[in-house]
Length: 605
Image 1 (cartoon, helix red, strand yellow):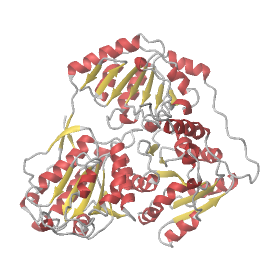
Image 2 (image 1 turned 90 degrees about the vertical axis):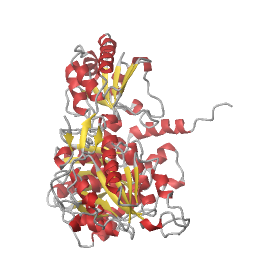
Image 3 (image 1 turned 45 degrees about the vertical axis):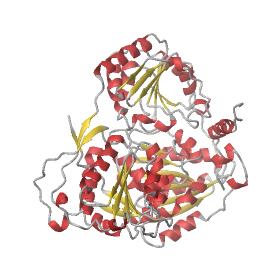
C-alpha cells in the first residue's frame, strides 16, 4: 500500500522507535493536477517549498538570515503551519535540524550562500552519517550572475560559484541548483522525495531573485508525494530465511544484537517481535540505545566489547551464533577493534542484505521483511538467556556521600536515572556522557539520542533545540560536557525564545575528558567559564529560565527538585562541578583501547 506523506502524524514514531524516518521507498511524484487553485500572488517558488515542507511533516525550519535568502524566508514565514526559528549560527541550525529529524522523521534548515553553506556543512555531514533525511536549503546568487565573469561577495573571490555545491556533493544524496523557474518545480520535488527515499540529507540552492516570482507550475496546491514501499526479492527472502533458520536452529546458545541501522530500516518492531518469538537474549550496540525497549523481559543491556553492560559481553561473545541487525562496526563501537567475535558465527542483517557467516549472502532482502519471516520459523531457544540469568549479579550502588562531599559523576547519574519516564528524552553529548548515559535504564517511551558515528563535540546543544521543538510533550534532559558546550553554547538563547523547558546538566570538569583518556596534553585543558552566569546573561530577563550551580549531592537533590517542581515550566540549567579526573570506568578502558588503535605503527613496506 502506498504511504501518503502529508501530515505530521505520519512521522510520529511508535514506542521506542525514536526518530524512525518515513518508510524508505521508491518515490514517484504524481503528475495529476490538484483541484485546489492557489491565489496568483502565492503561486511562487518560495511558497511551493513551504507547502512541501508542511506536507512532509516539517512544521519548524531552523535558519540564519543572509542577504541571499531573505526573500525566501519571507515566503516561509507566510506559510500557515510553518514556524521559522532563527538560530545563532548555521552550525547550530544544522544540528537543530538533525535533532528535529531524529524525532519527527525529517528536518530542514535554511542558510545563505557559501558563508552559511560551508558553516552548516559539518552538521549536514553528521546527519548523513546517521541516515537522517534533512532538507538543507541555501539562498543562492541572482540567476543572472550564473555564467558570467562576475565576482560575488560571500565567495572566495573567484567567478566560479560551484565551490559550495562541490562541498555538499559528498555529504548529501542529491543536489539541486535552482537558477531558473522552468524546472524549479521538478528539481525541488525530486530533491525532497529523494531525501525521504534515501533517508539522507539533500542540498537545494535557490537563486535569490526567484523565490517571489509567481509561475504557472506553482499555481495549484502540490500533490502529495506517493511513497511506494520497497519490496524484497521474494526468492532471495525465502532463501535467506531458510539458510538462517538452519544456521540458528542448530546453535546451542544463540543471541540477538540490535544495531543503529534498525532505525533507517524501520525494523525496530520487527526486531522485538523476533526476540519475542525465539526466546534469545536481546542486546543492543551502543549507537542503537533507545531503538529497542529496555523493559523487554530478555533485554540484557548494551554490547560494547570490553565496556559492555555487566555480563552482556560474556553472553554475546560466548554464544555459538549471533544475529546482528543493522550493525556498524567502527573503531569506536568495536572499542579499538577489540571485539571477541568470529565471523563464522555471525549473521549480519543490513537494511537490504543478509550475510550468513563467511557466506552465503543474499541481496535485495529488506531487514523488516526478513526479521518478520524469521520470527515465524525459528525454534524457541532460551538457553543463552538462562545462562545470563544464572551469572547475573545486580549492579551495586555508588558509595554513599558524606555530608557536603564533592559531588561524584556516578552519584549525579544515579539521580538523573530517577528523573526518567515516558515523558522525558535523553540527549547525550560526545564524551564521558556517552558512557554514563549508556548505563541509564530507559523506561518505556523514554527517548534517547546521541551521535556516535560522527561524534562532533557541541552537537547536543543544537540537537536538543531541534528535538525539544519536535516533541514539546516530552521534557528533554541533556547531559553536556563543558568543552562541548563552549563550542555551541549560543543557542541556549534560541531555546529560551522558543519557550522550551529542557533541563541541561552541564558537567564542569575543566576540559576535554574523553580526549584526556585517549591522549593527554595541555590542549585538553580549557578556560573555565561561569556557565550559570553566562546563561543568566543570555536569559537577560526574557523568557523562563532558571540556573543553579551544584558542588555536592545535597545541592544536586535540591536543584533537581526545583527543576522538576517549581521551575518545571522553565528552561533549567544546572552546572555540576566535578573533579577533572572523575570519569566512568568504561571511558578509562575505552580510551586506552582506542589510543592503542590510533597509535598502531605503519605496516612494514
